[in-house]
Every structure is written in structure tokens, then in C-alpha cells.
Image (spheres, rainbow, N blue to C red):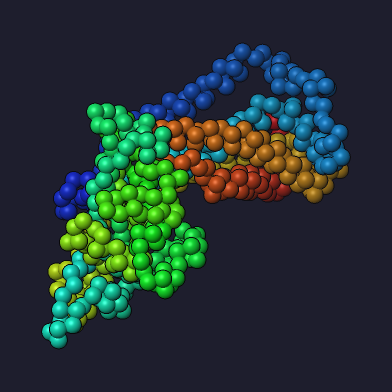
Length: 518
């Protein structure tokens, strides 16, 4: 498995060293092999020594009489009348078998319990590890960006941002495009304007300051991206009626309600962890900015396409493009407005080449285009490495658990040859034996899940608390893994039962009755 993992991700390890020529290959350590062999040998030795030591303490007469093996009172194997009613004689026999052989039954349930806990805990650990890697690393929702400055064409016409975005969006391989005009301003706000939870986190870093430094980014986005954004955030289009605003003459642009995203994910040097902070009270109705009083229409937790960028201590205010343009004369420094076009492509390399060709045909300088995905593939490679080894670890754990369960259950069934032969000899049909084993499977799986799921959820909570020490995230349970674990437990138990039952069915009844291994 290690060899296969290195085969797929060995050439991506350069992200850890910063040298593209670095590639890792599998190297087998003799010391590790010897250590593994020694551990395996000691495990087998101890496993054989414990029962042999117990056997030496039993006298010959006791061994023949099996008084130690069968030492139980009638009331100890009493089963519930409900079992008799629901599952008949077969269910009653299965219940008595469990009570009579508690040690063997307990070993099987513990094996299944360990399998469930290992699988769900490993899945939770890998999920949180992956989320941590994705959340901490810079992540953009676009592949290519184009910085823009309006200019005149050879015919004396102004080439606007919207025109450029429309022409470039028609390029083959471009899946999504947005045009953005943005104005950024520094602002100092009083601490009482910040939510109490955030204030408690950040005041330690700004103990000497009476105000909090805030960056406000006012963004205007094209109408198509704006409409998509409204649908994505679930906001009512009627509450942000650009048409009605135009019909009223477009006066008082700051009164057009802006959409505010005030949540950031930043590193707190005091707590030494990444934290999600809400920078403004969600009850605020107006954000005062220099010469503007911006009306807040809604607070959201996501940004439109192209603006999904991590920024420390930053609040985004989003408007339709026409509203933003009408606001520009009110900005203190109109020259501070920047323009950008963002692209999502089916393949960033091919898309970049096609966009360069389109830009050339439209008289747009090619060097205005920048392939962001090419630079940030290093981050993606690190995430891929984590995912490959995480899922490889889950698969390895699952295989070990399955092998352990299969061996425990099949061995237990095969050791009961004599019991099944006796039941067949007194008239129990194959259908009856199958019903009895099916009930046993339900008991095995049910008991394992009854204990395994709560313990797994507890371990998931512990993993969540550990991750919270370095990164703000929410608690969630790996429900997909839980469903897989539940289904796998019953599948493995029933499949193992069928396998062992098939081997027993082929045996001669008289030979099985002579078997003294049970």
C-alpha cells in the first residue's frame, strides 16, 4: 500500500521542499522489518502461551469431564419470552448459546466493536485533517484573473470592464466569469461595534488600542454574478431591486442596501490558532465610512464568485455594478478603484492559452492575465497528499479489522461442528439452523454497534476538540462513514456465517459427532 501511495503522489512532495525535482520513492527499512517480525512473533508466542498455561493447570480427569468448560446453572441461560415469541426455538437456542459461552461471544463482539470504532474514528480524523489543510491554506474559487484598466480602442471607443468580461467569457474552456470593481478603505471602529465573542479573542492582541483597525472592501459585481449570488445566499431579489432604484433616478446610492460579509478566518498569534471571527454585530443597519453611510441589507457567510479570498480584519460590502459606479464620486480617492475579471475554467492551462488568444484578438494586453491555479497547485498537492494517505490509512485499518472479524467469527462457528451435528441429529432442519445463525448475527452486530457507535462519537468529539486548538471549525459526525460501518458490520458477519456454515454443511454427520474439539 505504501508503494502504491508513493506511486500516485511521490512527485507531489516537492511542495514540502520547494524544489520541483524532488520526488519520493519507497525505501524499505531493514530495522522496521525486523521490528515488525519481532512484534508478530511475540504476539503469536503470547497468544499460544496464555491458553497453554491455563491448560497445564487442568487435571486429566477434569479435562475429560470438561467440568471447567461447562459450569453453569439453568437460571444463567434463561432467555426472555419475547425472544421465544419473535424468533422461536432457534432464537432461544442462540440466546442460550451466548449466555453459555460468554467468553467466546465477548471476543467476537469486542472484535466487531474495535472495527467500528477504528473505522469511524479514523474517518473522523482524516476528515478533520483534510478540512484543516483546506481551511488554513489559501484557497481561491477562480483559476485565472485579469487586471483591468479602461482604455480607448484604435477607433477612439472606450473599452469598458463589462465589455471585456463579455468578450473574454465567450472563450472556449471558460465555465464562469465575473467582473468586479472594488474600492478599499481603512476604517477604525470602536470595540463596542464588534461582537462580544470576537472582542474577547482580539482585544488581547490590541490591548493598547482604543479602536479596532478594519479594512472595508466595497465591491461592485456584474448583474449576472449578482443575480446568481442572490440565489446562492437565499436573499429576496425584491429586497434588492436595482430596477426600482434606477427608476427613482438612482439617487442616494448609499441607500441601496448592500450585502455584507463580515466573517473572517485569521490566525490569532495570542492563542496560536486559526479562528473564525465575526467583525460586526449582525444587528447593525448602517456602516459609516468616511463620506458614506452604507445601508446594510443583509449579513451573509459567503462571497460572490471571484471574491472568495481570505483577508484579515476585512469586511466586504457587495453591490450591483451600476449602483457601485454611481457611488464612486462619493469615494474620497476615486483613483483607488481597482478592476478585475475572474475566470473559472475546465482546465486552467488550456484556458489560459485560449484566453491569451482571445485577448490578442480583442486588443487586450496578454500580460494582464494571470494564472492563479498554476501558482497554487502546490497547496492543492499538499491537500492531495493528505487525502491519499488519509484514505490509505482508512483502507488499511478497515482491512485489518475485517480480517480480524472474519477470523474470529469463522473460527467460532467451525469449533461448533459437534453442536450443529447434534442439532441436526435430533431433527433441526437446515432452515432452522440458518435462522438460529441469523439471529446470532443480529446479536453480534447489534451489540457491537450498541457499544461501538457511542464510543466512536466520543472519540470524534475528542478529535474535534484537538482540532479546535489550532483551527475554528464546527463539530460534525461522519455520517457516511457511520452508514458504511453499520452496513459493513452486518455484511461481514452474515458473509462470514455463510462461509463457515457452507464448510460445515459438507461434513459427514457421524464424523462431526465424533469431533471432540468443541
